[in-house]
Amino acid sequence: MVFLRMLNNPRRSMQRLGFLKCLIWQASFATANSPRKLGNRLVNTVSHHVSVSLTPDLQNYIRYALTESKYRNLRSTTLKEINEERQNKPRTEIEIQDHHLSNPNLPSRRGKLVGDDWNIYPQLAVDLNLLRKGSYSISTKGHLFLSLVPDEERRAFDVSVVDSSDIINPFFLSIAQKLLLLFLLIDADGDLLRALYKILLTLADSFTAADAGNYLPDIYRMIAKESRDRVRSGDDSVRIQRLLDTAGKIEAVKRHPNPGGKNAREHGITVRLEPFVDIGLLSKPDPFAYSYQITNATKNLFEPLVDSDSVESFLNHRFFDVANKSMNLNGEHKITAYTCLPVLQKAYNILKSPVGYSPILELCLLAGIYSLVEVGNYFEISESIEMLKSLQKDKPRLVTFNVDRWGMLNFVKFSDDLTKSGV
Image (cartoon, rainbow, N blue to C red; front, side, top):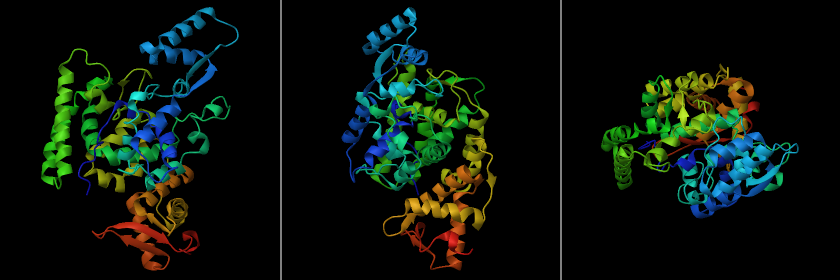
């Protein structure tokens, strides 16, 4: 039983999900990492300077996104080039992350990483269980995530390929990536998201990040109060106290007439809004402004989540149905051996360990993603688990389960290809 489904230390720098592609790939090269090493490597990689054409879209990005004093000369040069209206497009030196973020088709063009945040961003990967806590090594979910990221996207911050015509912008997410990241966000932060979006769904007009952040103190205190009876360790008590402390800090921000951008309220709220813009489930009319609008997609996702008995129940029994509707994927609900076993086998081939076992949750999650994206059918995690149980009863030598100390299924092993089982 998860004590709290809430991000441990949310920060504004966690807002762009595309950075995870580079971070997890870099983490995969070592059996153990340090946050300092990972964070510094990520920031250094995305901050490499490249020479690119000074297009109107890049000019707008420089004007509206790079507003700090250290970019004064760059902004001045940009305005000069606009006024001169040269026939040949001039070039400029810019960070490779800015080059990608300047794409006009991105729903949000904020969220660049800075050197001061080197130690913060890896925490998002830990909270989403893409990296293991402590060792910062890549987890099974991390391997699952990388299996959905093509090589071109992993190398998207390589300065040698930035001008390549076939380079893929890492900030665009595929449907498969969106499904996985949506699942991980709800799994990691579902308690907070349910309470927050229960309020946001009632707002008729657009709202800012500050508006939404003002609800956090009451939400934190409510969650802390409801969680006290479930405290089982000192770490649980520390988490509750941290929630209460953060609530007080946000209250102080609310009273300040000009609190600035990097404060407890903006840290706490941005990562609960911007990632859903990336996934396409929250509208951002101005890609440079932290202002949002609720859409039908937002309602189709969060209304069932808010009404569910628990986050765990939602993820196991309703996730793919709700994601299919909210992302307008037009999938058909099918749960048969013919539709299920091929994608379960495909997922197993990706996730199995050297001794042949695969975590059953990740296996069924990846199989569900394959089915919805590649076949156009969907089934829930609970349904695929029940199918494996049924198959194990019929063919005990084909499917082997491993259980944890509480008797819950946690690993599965196939002795042969499921598609050849004759079921």
